[in-house]
Image (cartoon, rainbow, N blue to C red; front, side, top):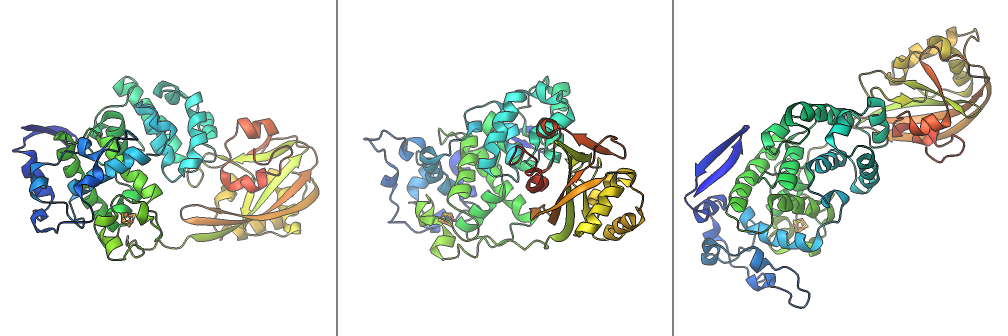
Amino acid sequence: MIGRYEHDGKTNFTCILSCQYLLSILSNGKISSMKTNKNLPKSEYKTDITSGKRIAADLHPRSPLEDSHPQASLAHPHNWQQLAPPLLDWYAQNARSLPWRETKDPYRIWVSEIMLQQTRVEAVKGYYAHFMNELPDVAALASCPEDRLLKLWEGLGYYSRARNLKKAAKQIMDSYDGKLPADHAALLKLPGIGPYTAGAIASIAFSLPVPAVDGNVLRVRARVFGDDGDIAEQSVKKTAEEELRAFMLTYFTCKQTQMNPGAFNQALMDLGATVCLPNGTPDCNACPWQSMCIAYQEERTIELPVKKKKAPRRIEKRTVFLIMDGDRVVLRKRPAKGLLAGLYELPNVTGHLDEKEALTYVRSLSESSDVSKGIGTASDRFADNASVQNSTENTGLQPLRIQKLEPAKHIFTHIEWHMTGYLIRVDSLTSESSGLLFAEQEDVKERYSIPSAFDAYIGHIKGSSIL
Ligand code: SF4
């Protein structure tokens, strides 16, 4: 038979002698040496007539190869052929119900996958609905003003994801007539789309047999195969991708299942997200692979996967100022590059200032305000203090009252901000000089995108818990 596959951006055709032959290669030639598993008879995958639920036997007919080699007892590396049928059966019964699974629209699947990077599913649901309501298609995203886009993204963090979405949307309008390309290699060339996201879109939206390997998949794979390779290493990820790509190409081309590649990828994601949980707490009794899993059989679920520890985050002390005149609050825009680039923030400075220092600093703000103060490291505390000391003239904001606010912490990928804060009431805000904005509460809520790092202090603005 003739097979079609993608490699390095090209569509290739290959002569496949037989599915049986290829599957024997994927099984590393060792199926014949595996033991019969008396605990997992084939009948375990029969139809439940009373419930009418789908059955494994219908979905995954045994190949002649499998029939000549009874069900293996433990998963062997590369033997996804053995693992796929029980996984797909489990998924048919246990798939999570998620808003972006109710559609095949590639745009919606793309946006959901980008939002889900670094963000919990439950947190994404509300943002996804709001985003889709306002930007229902590629054209709307491509023409959305950046400030509005960042406002829609507010709270999700990692704002470069939103900027890349827009850049990619413009390219899709220019090069693909507003439709995401049904081509794995072309997807990979779009801004913000890496191997995982390209695989997810290609398989879920377009049913292409390509893998989507993320941390969940690497964890599950390490455990089921008893693989102690470091999953933080690129080489381990690459091996997993290549092995799954070869398996999927054969398995789904051979039409051994009525499930599509997208269902397989989502099944792996769901198993990792709901059963084979991280930090040594997998729910093995609910796992369709329990009897085949090497980590389970060898009681190594706590030690697998192996993942080298990241360098500890740098701790940065900061003082945040909630400066208000009536209902108006002082904001400023961050620089176009660096941490939280281009977003709006409450004025803040490196170090923990006492009340006297805080008042002096606020008096100096409108004459010496420099947005770069908001992103400095511990060393610029000295520069900030020099600015405070030199500011003897009250040409800027005039504090009337000061109230210390509770400490707060915000964790970025490589940095932790340990914050203290002050609510400072000032005499009338008149001049928006020196990069300061005097924002009405409604604008804080609707117009300016303020990172969640400031939630603890923004929440003090009258009439809102967190705007
Ligand atoms: S049996 Fe346990 S450790 Fe093994 S894949 Fe399933 S949940 Fe993970």
